[in-house]
Length: 181
Image: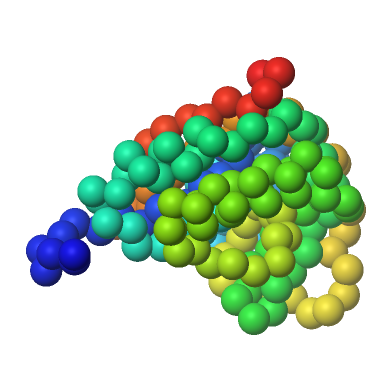
């Protein structure tokens, strides 16, 4: 039963790059901003969301971590090769040319486990991406090619989204290794 003063946390699962991978992604941002304008995402916030949960009651945090530990998928390489623009939300983002099969498997298993544990989440076809710019302006024209970023994904994380005077701030709450990692 929901308590009226129950604390909620804004949460999502993500692939979280290491410092070198994050720096390689951030290197795309200056040229992209010159083309599209907008606001550059802070390098420490770059990630690829797997499942967005939204507001979750704090007392369900342990069950959420249990659901994530039930996922049993191998690690994989994610190669970000292109930049795209979503006009509906004015975002420029990095994406792979093809979705690695193990990434699709990871998202599918995570969603199934979350359903088994009765978590609600934003269910939609999965499109892996890393947001590079917000408030960007672009047309339907192709953005120029960028140097590929090779990202070895050996784990995924549970992240809390917080806000401060600089905007979104993300805190990694738990880490979940993938097989062979």
